[in-house]
Image: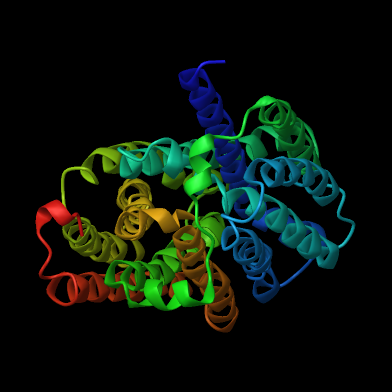
Length: 392
């Protein structure tokens, strides 16, 4: 097999798994109203679905991403896909809500092993177009994420919600077979693991600590929509339309991330972040306070388009500052984003139970404002002296 064919094989596997990972995460969000009916739980308990998944994901990130230079990456990618297949099958068999939460955590840990290492492989395969490939990689996630809620809708026309997980487990099997047959990329020999002294170096890097702080708020905004958008829309639209709102939001991620894959190579990261932040503040306020009906659906798409570019832009900013630490930077980025995933959905659940879901969702406006403050501070502060060619 030629070098080009091997690289193509890796791209197919990496993009296919991340697409199915997106589908798995977003089927979870689409099923939140179903979980409420099937297991008879309150909004506060429903708000735990995303945080529990976050714990498993972050644990895998810390254990395996930080050790990316010491472990056999291909072997652990194979283990991850196999474990994900098994955990998805068990998840669909959950007899109680408590066990459902446990199996969500196990599934997230299993997939998290792969996600802690996939960007390291991609970064080394495409060192000269890293920002663009990372954006396209996240676009593949968006494709799968968009299809996830649609899969739930189609399955539940005729079958139980549990069949959704059976379908996704079967779809993972060809990825396992293809990955097993691939050779390990030689370029991974240059990957470095995260040592204690390296932590101090990374923390002092403005592009990396700026990335981490911003991603806490980006992760918060994304996770609130992932977990609560169908539930929120259920108060404003018919059940059929409400079920489609998450797909509308996620469908915007596909053109959004495609657009940002080009914008990230043409503009400074900080310029993009400031511009997108201001757009999101206006769009969030208009959508959650002023709009209704078709205008709200259109604004949901607009918000999805712009918010989709934040994660790949920020992680590209961090990795470009320290390319040899792509694995550790990936860990820092994901742990930061998952901190938002852990805190924000549960917070919305508590506020919704105390007031209502409409009031709770306005938290998104405050998160968008916080992101603007951080982006402007980076642009005018520690990254102010860098030129456009430095990319920050």
